[in-house]
Picture 1: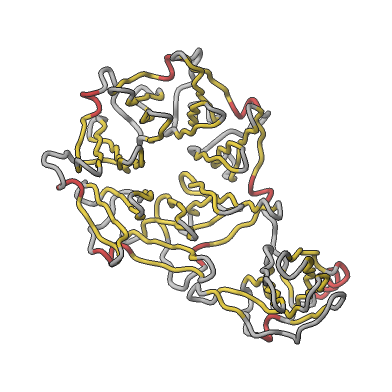
Picture 2 (picture 1 turned 45 degrees about the vertical axis):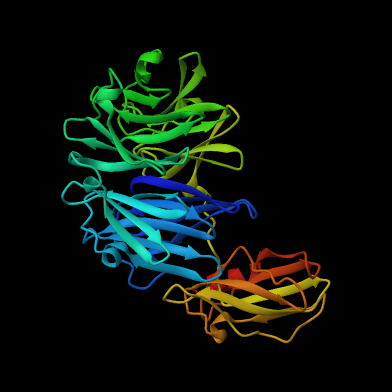
Length: 465
């Protein structure tokens, strides 16, 4: 079981839900659920590329078209960018070195705005840094000098794209919140939120921004350990959500929020170490649900939650009191609970792989793996093309796949679509265990199914050890 540091970051990519987080030893892990095979798996992103530095602080994940990204600080306070490019493999950039940006004093956060990936953090001088991807590469901008009089920042900025505008909110010394925003026509502007939102309480934690229809929201734990809410609806307004419900438990961590089922929902870790939900009911009314109690979970939380929508479900992911990655998820208003650590599918360690052809075509077997530099490699064919009803078995080690590497079966279909198995194996040279796969379908509509490993061989391998 991984030892999770801080708060996870959740994204969706194709048919997968990814939960990315920093491990206490500095590794960046990605636990993901693939709905096509209905399995949870884990990958160590720090091992995808040779020379990836250890992470400190929290890792932030996001997606762009055909790519997955993880951003974190290393021990030199450089911003490191590890990312996957579809059908090409893994890449890594030191964004601090590439841009000449100052060292980071906060963990990075990012979004896509104006068709470009943008990364933000507080630097060592307590100024707000912006890194922007352009056609010429990465570029650094000091946002604290974009306008005059921008005060020194504390903590980590929160960012959001809303109605064509780029918004940043960050905490100041003493708990005030400051708002920077960029309009494509008018350029950069700013607000001192505690001045424009009358009655707003000072912040004790980091702000979280989200949007609903025609409203911009800033949520945070205030200095009275309540969840405060500052929002823009034809002007800035402020309220304290704890005052909208009965028997509010008080907040221990920072909130997050999402819109699900046409309701704004706010999640946070309470002082009694459970995850709570505040949900908007209309007419300025809010409801409250103690989620761990609702699903019968007595373990509770030790970390702050992150939330997303995947497969029409609202997921709330957090580190529980036993250090495990846990997930509270709702279909409609019915809540469920699972421990992701208990769901992880262990990849079989095999010495050989068999591909059976049950398709209406000729096929030959190849293997796909990542090399030490994160590049996706495909081996030469392990066989001549063979017809329906035939099988072929080969050892990945004999075709250049490194010992201990994840390996996928690639079926080269003669005059047709050539699929890649969704479930990989671990290549273990000399193992007597054989994994079995079957390809079915037609030349243009086919797929590879994982059939498991040979039970007799698996037992024999156990006896040998």
